[in-house]
Length: 229
Image 1 (cartoon, rainbow, N blue to C red):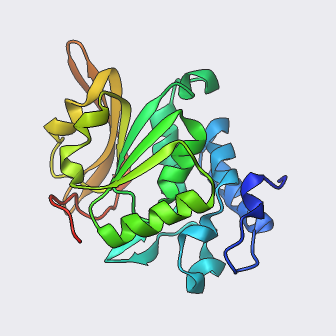
Image 2 (image 1 turned 30 degrees about the horizontal axis):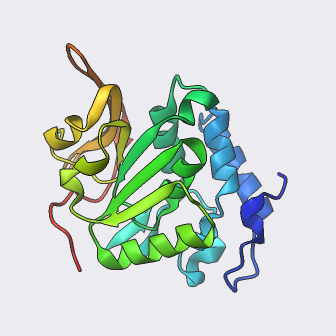
């Protein structure tokens, strides 16, 4: 793996973990992640910058890690899988024109990965302390095409709609109508659905209705209303 533009970013940890990232990418490929755009994005973004320093040595393990406020950074495979589903069927040129909404910024890692793949990313985080940290990390990496907002994600972001795709990193009991309404015709919603038992869904908004495809079992925090200061 060749060094990339983010490897020069310093945060006092003295760590770029190229070999660890190589192992992570090989593991993702072994698990069925084949989209080159997605693999390049996961290769580029330094995951260790998105976790607490005490956990940095575990950053490239394929596991979720705590980030505070009762939330986690998703496992690399989860991030890769959701991004691959979101981008399925698009070329690099198409992706560069896409405008995406992410609900549930968390650490900012998924937003940073999406920003490598598409033209514009809006991300909403309901917990203000997490939003502040995520925005700092995005600025630290010099990512210019990602805007993070502190708001109630269940309402989406009407001011920037419609979106080519919306990705939700929390599990909803049912498909949120407000988010569907903010999709373009032909747009897709990537969302985990369910409560005690969850599954990841790819929902496409078409002129004549919805196409709902169940992708795989999932385990996410619940999709909650409101915002927290």
